[in-house]
Image (cartoon, rainbow, N blue to C red; front, side):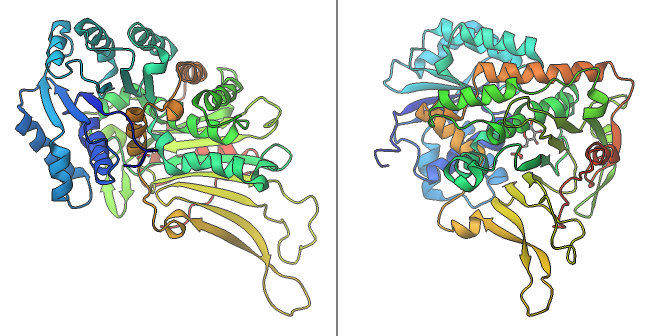
Length: 493
Ligand code: BG6
């Protein structure tokens, strides 16, 4: 490990080590970091959960998780190094006295204790209190927590208050895994390192911006969680708003965490509220019915295992959003996200304004405007749609729509593109807060989302149905069509 990537060894303590998040994401990401030689040699990983296991039993579970979720063959040499880091502690996280057990593993070592809360939020307070009581924490200790941080402003404040009693804000690392995605970070580079974009990034040149986070998956056996949450809280409150802040923020003075956070908060606080008065014009809710994805039939939301057939929870949301500041005056942002859509696609489409006068009527009665499409996943890249003359010696100049296409995997062949978790887990171990959310950001986001939830609670309408495997309800097309615009056409996969 070179000097730049070196960091203090950690005791990474995973609360909820046998849970879904840990098995599907965390343990897999840590293995990938191990493989990339990015985990400090003396770092240890302690798994905590309520089930009775010994260390070898826990290690076997990790091996099984890798086999299930890694999507590549486990390298025996890496595995030997990786598996040697683990130990397991059985604990009932609601019993504060049991946190004393941590003393046997965190025994005043010189490692930094990084506590990863991979559990349901109702346990966050218990864990904080238990850790405080056990006496294992010091001012270098950190805590990492994931969404959902509450389900509204009030509950998120309660969680943040409970955490603040034990950890100072600088010790708290709140994860939104989208901030670890390569292309989200690349937005900073694209916008602030390239003058071609910097100078054109405002209401003078941009007509509107679309952000789409379409998911192919349904609710993956999480009916209980999802039905209480809905797509607005599950995806939009966090992932889409985070993407929006990176697209819309002013240039930060540098790349320090505080500078970036300040700019993001300004965007969140400039979001025009969606209220009971305007929610009908600005929002669409959808719910998937049975359909087909990749040629296979899939059930509707209300037919999923464990479903309450009376549910009116939304699995799709489309919003028209305004940002009330100088840069974005009059530029709408259209956001949409849904489960069980035709295929997985996360992208930002920046639609530039049309030319004021068309001298190419022979080719286009209505001259198409330029677009910058930023593909976040599954195929990371940047594409610019331009008009070009078709080569030839005809008397008339004929134009054709073409694109400059930059696919990251083609251009950066030798660089591995990691998923969001690898980056974030690593940064949490390194103690770099730049990619994590501040309390203020989360609370601003909830304030804005609560107003939408309130408007929906006072509406008669229920979510509009859409067949699984489509791009959402017709009402979402109408939302944007009312402004004489259309969602970016989805190319067939
Ligand atoms: C999670 C949501 O935060 O993000 C899930 O809880 C969703 O419902 C997932 O499926 C999507 O993440 P990604 O990285 O696959 O786009």
